[in-house]
Length: 404
Image (cartoon, rainbow, N blue to C red; front, side, top):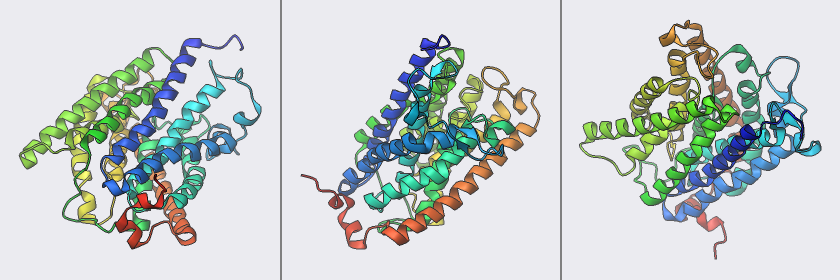
């Protein structure tokens, strides 16, 4: 390898890749514990199959579209850099092998697609889901990743901040989940008066444990270095998750007089979502404020579906969509202008322009994701019957899989 290689940074990003990959099986367990037994294997399978579907797309052309040289200077899409097909492990991107960088970015795309499955759990067929995954990653994830993560992307060049995927992963999956939930309509047993109770709390908590573990690679690895920036991201991730968990539990106690079976776990997840775009740019005070705010916002956001009538089965919209918005917006206030942050927020003497850019970025990604996802979902439903029949849905989707 060339002399520019930094072995410490490379090792950290490689380990982070493995940690983030583990998040998708963790998500499968987390989702699986919240559905009825007749749909458990189907829900698990949707997350696992996302690994294969997205990886093949990424190897063939996905990395080139997301991180290739910008086409025409507009910041909309990349081209070239088909690294998996023609390069060698010795080629560097900065001070780490391009293979390592590209694999780390791959696992972000994988879990984004897997997250969407939670909004329509129990009512999608596996084959059409795989087709949807290929098209959605191509038309939605890859352009948005280029906008935000690539140096040539228009959101990146404009100066809006997203350290580890609040726009690309969290908001994108939440809004896409909303669009797909509207396409397919509510499940047969959707209840406006309240959400169903999770069926296997130990499975949910085991999944959450893997997610929390992986999140340190998700956020810390996004520093692409093993130094102070990664340390700041990891510490803020821990603080925000813990604060949000405790605040969520206190809110439940105040509102309902008791703790719920799932509340603390959901609160921790909301905190991890909110800190994702901000972890490298804020300090511990900012992480604490984010944890408090996101717990309050998401406590109510998860209840909107019962009054609005859309079936966001496992609260992808209420946690990832709303939590991602909280994290991206509050960066406009609490970005320190130090560590990895090129711009300070209002609380640290910055101008209101950063807050404006954060809001515009939310609107741009949200509108694009919603419209394109809705069109893709409709097309797949018309052509391939995305949703199973009422009889199949009532029997449970595990019957679609041959389980011996």
